Amino acid sequence: MRIVGGVARGRRLHPPPANLAIRPSSDLLRESLCNILGPAQFRGHVLDLFAGTGAVGIEALSRGATGVVFVDRDLGALRLIEKNLLLLRNLINGCSLHLLRHDLQGGLDFLQRPELPPAASYRLVFLDPPYEKNLAGPTLAMVDRAQLLAPDGVVVVEERWPTELPQRCGSLHLDDTRRYGKAGLWFYRQHETA
Image 1: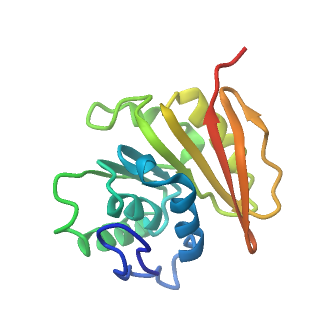
Image 2 (image 1 turned 90 degrees about the vertical axis):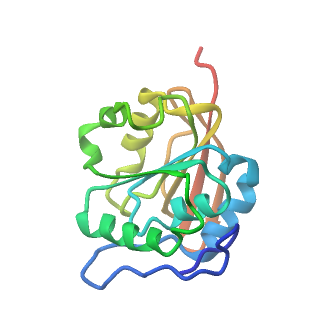
Image 3 (image 1 turned 120 degrees about the vertical axis):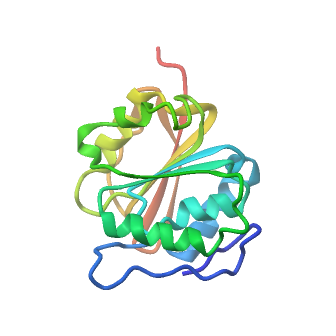
């Protein structure tokens, strides 16, 4: 695993140990994600849900994100993210970083803490739930209800391909889908609800 772009391009990240059930996003998938979104999408706050290794959030930091909130329910995953962030400590000074241990089945109200970015400020929300657990749809609905996106924000879901995800989820509308082998990316943007 390596960072594929930005100021930390080429830096290797620590892979998950064998005892952690983490499936990191591939380098190819992350590079494609960043190319599709373009550099401007990373200039702001990023929310990395089911963060695992933290590779997507760290990629965003390398590309200019002002801050990242990493959320995972596994303490081992959060320790791995912390270890990976230490590799970049000289490059991410001044960035707002938060590592939160939370099981998302309880909702996203925990993101309303005063030390975290305010609602409607995230330029990118990335969801990478464990495949075949049917968590993508319910989590997408939680993101919509919590009104986390900035007006020009995007929610990206990584899931096993093919997976049935909704065309619309509240104010979020499916804008694009891409396939990368056994994985897929679903891009949702906010639209006014009728």
